[in-house]
Picture 1 (cartoon, helix red, strand yellow):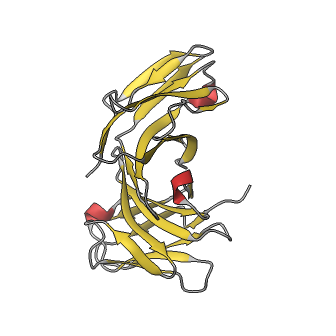
Picture 2 (cartoon, helix red, strand yellow):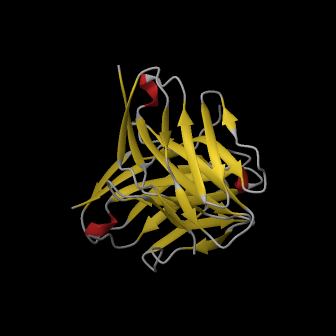
Picture 3 (cartoon, helix red, strand yellow):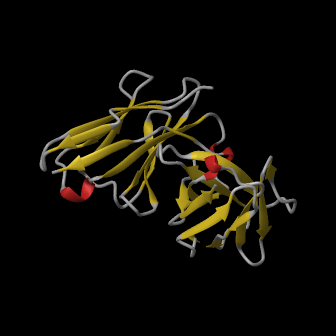
Length: 115
Length: 114
């Protein structure tokens, strides 16, 4: 079974600064996908970024980038130029490389961006 | 941008009552899911649905739960006899062709069992 661990329950960052959210996972799979989802106060789960395990290059989406370390089973999210709208819960999630696979989520981290 | 729509946004029900949570996935999506999030805890998989049948279900998804796609557009989650511990946020999600690209989630239904 897969597990996803987010050990930091909450973090705070000043607006315009950079913050890194940590995530580790455990799996015996070789091919898989990793995701970061954002859950703002509206409660909707929004996909932030996706990484394919067989790609060494770290994924980037505008201000969001990941540091994927496959051997260490680590998948951190870096948010650059933090904005007030980034305030949300962030979930790291794992998906096996198979048809119709489910997501396994971590416990999440609450990020507060201070003005 | 297409959305996954869930209704109602909040439902309060008495213990032992049946509830039906409704979802309208994105129209050309083929894979459908229900997840739940007990307040302050992580999001948990309940069930996946493809080609008009359940693909996988978790140990949470016991005989009290069922899913249906009654008319080709709606995707419902029924809880037959609600318990206090069923109080949670329930999220519907759908994926178009390859779920490995990630799902689109709805805004959730907050279920409160009293």
